[in-house]
Amino acid sequence: MSANRMAILRWIEDLAAVIVTDAEDAADLATRIAATPNLSAQSFSLEVLSLTRVVAESVDAASDFDLISSALQVDGTTLPVLQILQAMALAIAGVRVDWPSRPSARRARSRMASSGDIALSAASALGAGGAETFAWLASLVAVSSRLISDLAANAAPIVRVQTGVSLPSTVLAYQLYGDANRAEAMIDIAGAATPLVMPTHFDALAS
Image (cartoon, rainbow, N blue to C red; front, side, top):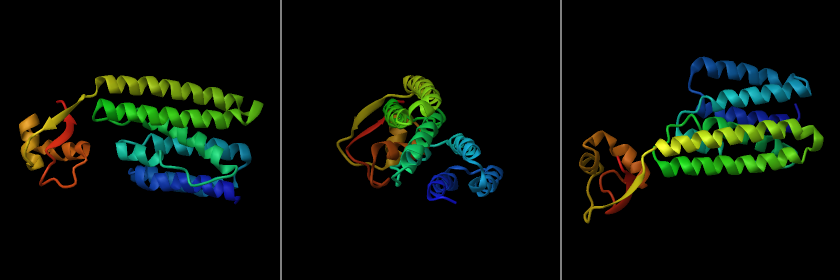
């Protein structure tokens, strides 16, 4: 197996190990990945796209989206291929996450669009051979951007909370939302270091 194919399949495999939690899907992916190196060039390309789609469609959390958007640790001729696959995965994954706030959805849209721009440059560099890939990817990114914009419009806005004194997250969650069980989500958005003592100034969902 060529180094390029190894790097591409390793990227998909690493993502699948964390993102794909369904046992049947994970087993099917493992079987398909094992068979992929021996495919012809065209069949390999199509299968890699399909494998990436399966991984992206398994996304259900912002942390999965973050993992896909991590910096690519490859170079040479493998990089543009992974840039295209990454942009495709982010476009699919971005609309599957229940973004907790408008800012988080807007940040996701920005990251997806930025990845798309990089991937479109990579596809454009392929010349006439990349025209179909360019058109397909441009359409995918545009649709995803509109859908994530809709998600952002429907997500809760962020407000600035000032308490004057440090309080436990459960107390603040009850005071803000009437539900102490929302403390964990509040901690994530606030970026608090400890749930026991929250900062006196922090960002939180408006509702």
